[in-house]
Amino acid sequence: MLKGLAITPPVLGRISIGKVVEKAGKRLPEKDDQFTITSQVQNKDGWLVHPLDEGLRKEQGGKIRNIPIRLLFNDPDLNFRAEYSLFDRSTGRPLCVGNGESCKRQSEDGIKSLPCLSPDGCSLAKGGSCKPYGRLNVALSDDDPLGSFVFRTTGFNSIRTLAARLQYFQAISGNRLSCLPLELRLRGKSTRQSHGTPIYYVDITVRAGLSVEEALTEAKRLEEARQMAGFNQAALDEVARQGLGNGAFEDSEDEGGAVVEEFFTPEAITEHQAVSSDAARSAGNQNESSLLEKLERSGQPRKSA
Image (cartoon, rainbow, N blue to C red; front, top):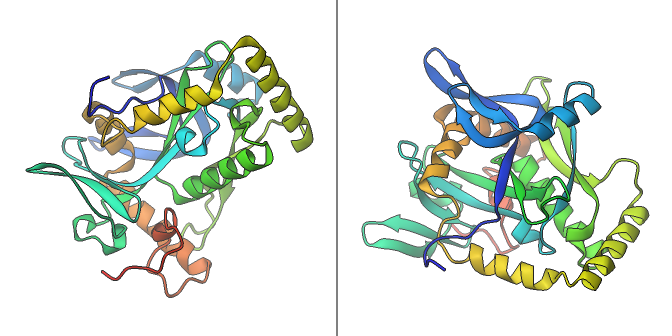
């Protein structure tokens, strides 16, 4: 295995709730009220739609609001990775990734491990260029149980909800997260800052038409069938864990360019700050400057800047 190269789950396509459009000669991110499933091929008009998108769109009357999924791993942190991330917006190169306690940062002397004070306490993150960034890998069909589609987000509503759901489902299923029949579900909420316009985020639930009890029964049945066939889920989780830990940064410079274009433009950062600030006020957290610090905080007292 090449050292310094993060080995990520194989990706067959992308899931998004927005797109990049050209306005006045600039390519800018635009939010949407539906899922879009795309391939990994991009042309001048954007990412090419994946064949799975058409089938789900027909089933749901034109807009995809639910996507049936299975997870690849039993460990929630392998399925969904979220950190505070800072990219070079001109090159797409990852510069710094942290979890609120420690970070890995590019420097002239190579990659350094440093304390992470979260975006509000870090001088390098001034201007809102560092923010939570999560990647969720899911399987959309049983044809390729090791292939995945990736959903990327910098929205704290999606990050917080996905992290909680995965932990809860792992707990109630007895560590059978990879066997549960689940679905991605698009949800909306409004804040004072959005002036009544819905803000969309992503949730994970059991598949439509199934109760939690039925989903747990299905997970147990599938786990037993896999074990009978010799499928070693524990070994798969461990190999994935080693692969993700093999590099300092999960996103390559090539991938980072697309990420920056969609999530880390000045316009996207301004919008994210406005929504986060409003969410903090509406939650009554007047003594917190931002909700961003809560995403990865482990319950320790806040460090002073």
